[in-house]
Image 1 (cartoon, rainbow, N blue to C red):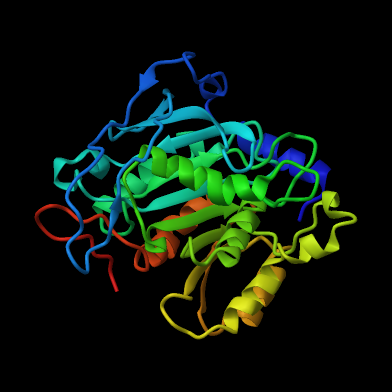
Image 2 (tube, rainbow, N blue to C red):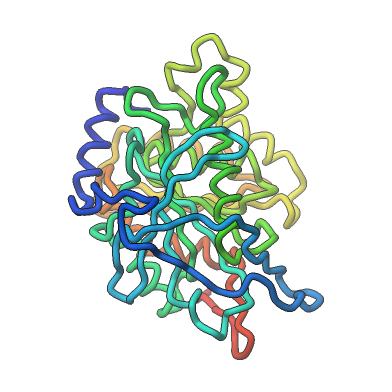
Length: 346
């Protein structure tokens, strides 16, 4: 994992990729209100059908933080996590299909997108310049991706330290924030699925580490992750004096434990790794992780992006080249009231 000085440089460089106009967006009355809407209840799922969880509330107050070419908009709000106690911003986006009357009573799969660097005070996946939301919209129409709801929280509580997306003793509980409060917030405001089949992470660099660790730590809640150029060990300096807790957040230890479980559907997780071909430093560590821990219910795939480096634009190319389609094949698509369900290619 990059040291604080290099992580700060990475965070600044990638944050600057966001349109400057978005950096000043405030929630709670600082911009145009945004309502995602939709029914709050509906018919029960038929036997064998995925169970839709209607918004549980209380509803958040969103303001517009950006617009996508397909007519959808990105919202932002400030969330105080009921379980972590941490207060931070969360950006959200729902795909066009979410507003289609044919899917009015269907849940939608959720992708929690995490940035690299310190991931504070913003999340660079919220910026329309990288095109994550436009890409998902386009790829879903082409049958290469599910139409994900995308949640983009801040990753850390400040710009001074990194917290490995974990509950480090005596520090803000960022593991609970990412793995519990943010999903609870999405369930409060959107139609989702009850099953873990509707929940996944994606992240780059330090965000890739957190997404990878979260899926391996909570395979009962999340089924898949796209981990791009990820760190593979927890090495925040804030772990000093807390070795037992650090080991409990080590992806290698978590993957080894999960790999010893029976290779049954309830245990299976899908780890989609991405590397730019130019990532000669972190690349061997990621490949060693894949060789060591891909066994039993731990399934993995590696997307190498030709000419790519350790940056979000490289990883966007990898998503389109196959990573998002691979996890989509293993997650729950929305179910229309009439017609056929989404099908990816073999």
